[in-house]
View 1: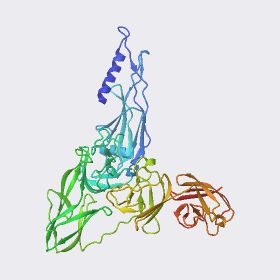
View 2 (view 1 turned 90 degrees about the horizontal axis):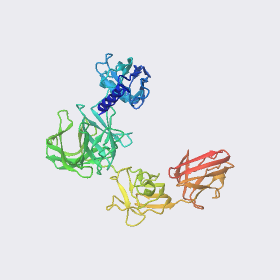
View 3 (view 1 turned 180 degrees about the vertical axis):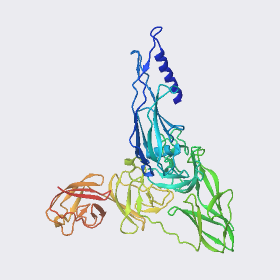
View 4 (view 1 turned 60 degrees about the vertical axis):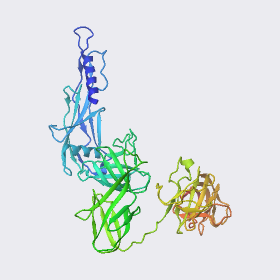
Length: 560
C-alpha cells in the first residue's frame, strides 16, 4: 500500500509539472539535490545494557523543490527520502528505511538487529554503511548522498530463548526454549490465577496480547496496540507454547502428575519451590514408573475461561533428563523402598527428576504479610492488593495501620496479587477468622476511616481500633503527659510543630489516645513501629516540624 500511494503521488507531481497554461508552455521542477548525511558517531560497541538507549542518529539535509510556474505547488510528501544500510560499500544488499523526517535514530537493540540482519559477525568490529536516496518517485532515478561508514560491534542474539516477563516487565518469571530458533517456543511456568505477563525474544521483540482483535491467546509485537497476556484462574504449573509464526500461545494447566507403571502415586506442585513432589513406594527391585499429566489446555479457540483436555507424557532421555513424548516412558527404580520423588521443570533445556530414599517432611507456609483486597475498594475502584499489614515481632501476630473504605468487606491473602493463595475470611462471628474457608465469606469492614488492624493467626481473631484527629507526643522534654499534639492531615498522616527545650532522657512516643499509655508508636531513623522503642531524634533544642505517616510507617523531624 505504501508503494501504491507513492506511485500515485509521484504521478500527480509529474502531471502537475507537465501541465500547460497554454499550448507549448511547460513547467519545470528544480532543486532536487543529493542530501548531506551526517552521523553522531563512527564507532559503536553494542551490548544488551544499551538496548533501550539511543546510540546512533543520522541526519540529512533537505532538497528545496521549486516549480517554474509560481501558481503551481509541490504536493506534500516530496521529495521521497529513503535511508539505506548495508554491510558492503557497494550496497549490493540493502536494508531500507522509508523516512518522513530528516533524521533517524537507532536504539542499541534496533542497531544490533540491523547489524545482525546485514550479516555482521558478533563481537567483531565491522563496517556498516549508510546512504540517503532522494527522489521524486520510486520509479525515478534518485540523488544519492555520500556514504557514511560506522564501525559496529554487535552482540549475540540468542533466539533459542523466550523470556516470560512480569506485567511491569521488570522480572523474568520463566524461560521457554526453541532449540532450532524457529520461533516455536515451549516450557513450564509457575503461575498465579489470572497472572499478567509479556513475552520477549532474544532480539528484544516484545509480544503481548493482540490489541486489535482483543482475542485471548492471540499475540502481537506491536507495542503501540498490544497489552499484557493473562493466564486462566487456576494457580500452579502450566505447560506453555508460544508461536511467533502463528502469533498465538497456549497454556495447559497441570493439576497433578500421575506416577504409574508398577506403582500408583500422585505428585503435587509446590509453588514455593517450583517443584513437583510426592512419595513413591516400590515393592520390588527394578520397578518401572511412568509420569503423565491430564491437563486443561487453553488457547485461541477456547479463551481463558474454557479448556480442552490435553495429556502430557514424560520419558527419560539417554542423558538422564526428562523429555515430552507421545507415550509415557519407563523409569527404572533399582531397589524396592519408599522414596521422595521431585521433578524440576524450570530449565527449559534440562527437565530433571530426583529420587531420594525416605519421606521428606513438608514445611509449613511462612507468612510474613497479609494483603487486604477489598478493604478500600471504594477508593481504589476495585479489589486490589495494595493494602497490607506485616507480621510483628511476635510470631503469628500482624499489626498495621490501614485506611478502610469498603463496599462489601475484604479478604486476607498471603501472596500479593494471587487469588489462589492461602486466605483468611470471616469466621462464625465478627472478630473471628477461618483459614481457606468455603464459601469465602468477606470480613465485615467498619465505617470509612483509618484504623489499627491487629490479626492473630494463632487464635484466628482480628480487631480494629480507630485513629483520632490528633497524635499525642508524650515524653517530649521529659514531660510524660498528653499536652503536646500534632493534627491529622490525611488518611493516616499527621503533621505539626513541637518545641524541644531539652533532650528527653528516654525519648518520646506517639500515643493514639489521650491517657492511653498502651497503644503508641515508636521508632528510629525515620521508621515507625507499633509499640516500638522510644523516638530519640530530639537531641538539639529548637522548634521542629514533625510529619508522620502511620500507613507507611514513617516519620520526619525537621529542625526549623
